[in-house]
Image (cartoon, rainbow, N blue to C red; front, side, top):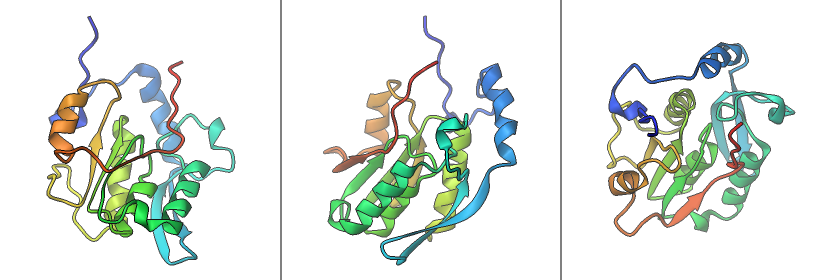
Length: 183
């Protein structure tokens, strides 16, 4: 029988972490830093906490890393704001949350940023709080226009949709560099 997945939203502090995952966490602490990103001819600025690397594919952290595809998606959204304006948006594997934050700034009616990794989710909430004029709390409500929620693909999908998606589903589903291969 599969091991039950503990979600950060469950409020339990004893989330199971695999040994190799726990050992790698400290390696990233020194490289995570704040940096500024500009999009839309410099009209939209994001202050982001994460790892910025010329070669992110060589890093072991994926969710804490700024990926080129995320920057391209953000630029594309800025060039085509009608994609998200007045629409409900979910970003899968949001990592740093850049595209979702851009969607929010461009006028999305609701944005749900998701990631499966608890450390990434915590950092994403920090990035949302740094860039959005609303208080981002651990216990977010779906009345807020932008929220960060844990989504482990394939687990509890129906409950996730019931709890966070509009009744008719999301208008826009987006993601960048979200292919995952379990080693």
